[in-house]
Amino acid sequence: MKREKIHSPVLINAAEMGRAHPDTFYYAPKKVLDSIRPGDLIKVCDQSEFPERFWVEVTKSDGNGLFVGRVDNYLFPDKPYNFGTLIRFGVENVFDLWQGPVSELHELEKLPYQ
Image (tube, rainbow, N blue to C red; front, top):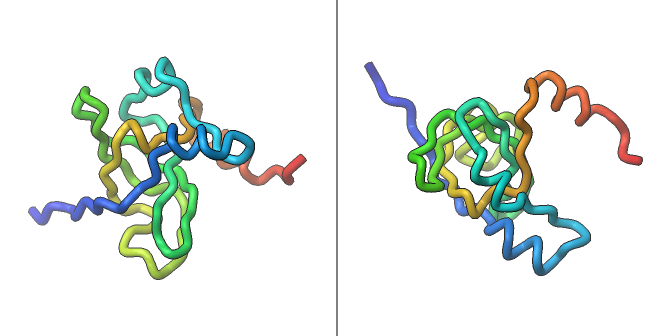
């Protein structure tokens, strides 16, 4: 059985970015970060030529702040990772966390900005 490739993109440190740009970058507090578990959706941001914030469904946790998850958004097509691929990330990369049903999050994202 062939193992699925796990990508290791360069991701932004959420806390550092949030402190530098508090009006545009929210980052999750420690108590929220400590509650991350498989099945949760977390938001990360990459450091590519065209940085994007995107959702990832957590599939594995090592219990020490390192995770593997499946990308849950379609991204710019030039990236080696995109919807459905696995990536590695750390707790320091988490901007936001969604612990409700995925379908509810997708419905919220369809709403126009207020």
